[in-house]
Each structure stands twice: as C-alpha cells, then as structure tokens.
Image (cartoon, rainbow, N blue to C red; front, top):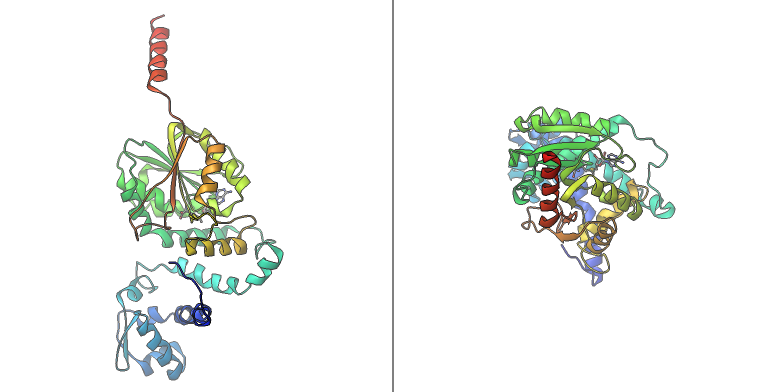
Length: 355
Ligand SMILES: C[S@@+](CC[C@H](N)C(=O)[O-])C[C@H]1O[C@@H](n2cnc3c(N)ncnc32)[C@H](O)[C@@H]1O
C-alpha cells in the first residue's frame, strides 16, 4: 500500500482511520463474535446478553456488518465465516493470543509521545517475565500459522538436511519447513519460556518428532553445531545494526561451507527507507517496544552480511499476497568449497587411510 497525503481531505481521512479499528476493538472487548458464535441473534437479545445498550449495539453491529464481519438481515445478525472461527473463542481456529497482543498495542500506541521524547521503550524498567514471553510466543504462533506453510511451500530446501530456526519462538516456521520437507531435521532456538510453547505445539504435529530445542541468548552465546540453513525470521528488527552484525558473524560460523542464512523481516526497499509503508510503520512499534530496534533497508542489511563474511546476497521473491512482508526475504550464502578443494581433501583423506 502506498498512501500519499496531498490535500487536507487526504490528511483528514488518514487521521480518521482510527474509527474502524476502534469499532473492531470494541467488538473484541465485548467478546461479541464469541457470544454470537454460530447463532443468529435479534438485537435486543444480543444487547441483553452482552449487557450494553440496544442503541449502542445497533450502531456497532451495523458497522461490523459494513466491514463484512457480521451478516445483517433486518435486526438479526450472524457472524461471517471469519468472525465465527478466528475471532470466536469457542472455535478451535481462534487466534486469541494475537488478538490480545493487538488489543494491548492500542493502549501502548496511545503513549507514543513518551517514546518519541525519550527514545526509549515504554517498558524499559520492567524485567521480562516468563508469563509475558509465553503469551507473546502464542501470539506469534497465531500470527503466522497460515503464513508459515505458504512460505515453506515457496522456499526450496532441496538437499538441506539441517535447519536452525534462530529466534524461532513457537517454531511455527520450523514446523512448516519440516512438514514440507520429510528428510529435514530442524532445531528451534529461543528463550526457555518460548521453547516450552514450541514443544507444546510440536507435540500436536507428526513432523514435531524431527524438531529439537536449543535455549540460548542469540545475542551473546555461541551457536553450537553446524547447519545447512539458518532461518532468521522477524528478529532483525529487534536489534541495532551493530548487534545484527554480531549475530551475522556468529551465524556464519554456525553454517556449513556453502550454507545459507535466510532472513525474513520488514525490509525497506527504496533508497530513503520509506517504503513499503507497513515496514516504515513497523519501526514505530520497535521504538515503543525495543531499546535499539528499527526496520532496515535491503541495502544496509546486505552490507552487514558482506562485512560478516557472506559471499552472495539476494532477495527471494514470494508470490504477492503469499508472504509475511512485502519483499521480505533475503538469502545470504557462506562461500562454498570449490570442487578442486573438495577433490584435494578427498585425495588426502584416501592417502592418510592407505598409510
Ligand atoms: C518477533 S518473534 C519472531 C518469532 C518467529 N521467528 C517468527 O517469525 O514468527 C522474535 C523471537 O526472537 C526471540 N529472541 C529475541 N531476542 C532473543 C535473544 N537475545 N535470545 C534468544 N531469543 C531471542 C524472541 O524470544 C522471539 O521468540
């Protein structure tokens, strides 16, 4: 999406864009989609059930119907297919943890001026609680449970035997890669509280038997083992350029010769770092919630990767609408061993065996 505000009307429209989100949040706060469930409701009955005024609910429901989330027939309302599933706490497809995260973000974004003034995150004095990490990890699962299989089906891992999902959180991506590639073994690396969630999710998948777990601090700990591919998704934006360079250096040492680091993030693609708009806006979240995070351009990230010793860097194109972020995948390769060196190594191994 590319929005350009050229006149006062454009400005007013952009500024008033909070209205529908506030209506959606009010519906979530009332658990409206859950209460409606699979039934058709008359407004007075529904108003009694959720304990709000009939007038208020009628205007709210009408707008939810305009947005396509409810179906309206006279004063009867029922859920759309989406509202009856992903937004309904009684449905197995409910994505409540992610909805909860977005609800909290509304309140956090109201405090944006605090972070703009200080340059610091809102919770800078609060130590990370395992409970928060657990909730956040479930939210990440609910965020990507449809996207991860789409990415896995487009990203070729032919011949890849081992993959590390670094900062993999719930392991949703690792699970998607494992499901798609039956010969693959994967390791998800994250903080202990996140790994607990990853284990619970993997236990519900057959491919989960090929997933291992690695608890470490990816900013400071050495990564044990050597992998064919390291998948680094949605972590780059949490950290500063210097921290990312440090991670890239350690990641390089944890890859086999010719191995690949595949980064997924909200990359900016133009010279000034303005677009896509979603990636520019995401930087505001990083201001609110991280000490040094930001969104980065492909050009800057490529420069850090080269500095860390990666040889070739390229963007990997996904089909439009079947990606996490627009143009959001970058692949970097560790220099491979040439066939000449491989032949020399083979010969010297044979020689040492025959002596
Ligand atoms: C935004 S989530 C992304 C999760 C997943 N990779 C995805 O794409 O959905 C970032 C993850 O990185 C992990 N992470 C961030 N900094 C870390 C660190 N220093 N050590 C270990 N894990 C870290 C977080 O715990 C979290 O699970």
